[in-house]
Image (cartoon, rainbow, N blue to C red):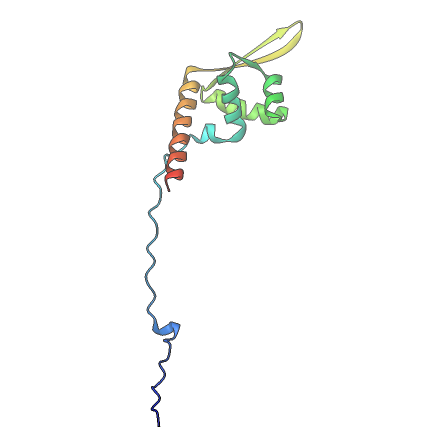
Amino acid sequence: MARSLPQRRKPTKAAIPARPRVPAPALQLPELDRLIHERIRLGIVSALATNASLSFNDLKRILKTTDGNLSVHARKLEEAEYISCLKFFEARVPRTEYRLTATGRRALSHYLDQMEHWIRLTRDQ
């Protein structure tokens, strides 16, 4: 008569020691300029970087935003001296015109360098 071999039992999950998880190293990403990073403010400085100046209405149309929203964001950029604001009358109609300052141009350039660095790091992962 043939002898049967004892059946081997599969170890239960509790019997298998869990391998410790080693977290992937976190990416060291540069800190972004939070003033420019907001969508409307980035739109304002980008539009002004490609134009010598733009009126309030031009920016409002380009960015598809409201008067109040544009006004608040433009004021923040103006307080940081990223843009300059000139108010005047043209044929008795008040006009507001914005220009990107040298400080704003440097800040935008630095921000774009940071974003390019983020993109390279992300693609390399």
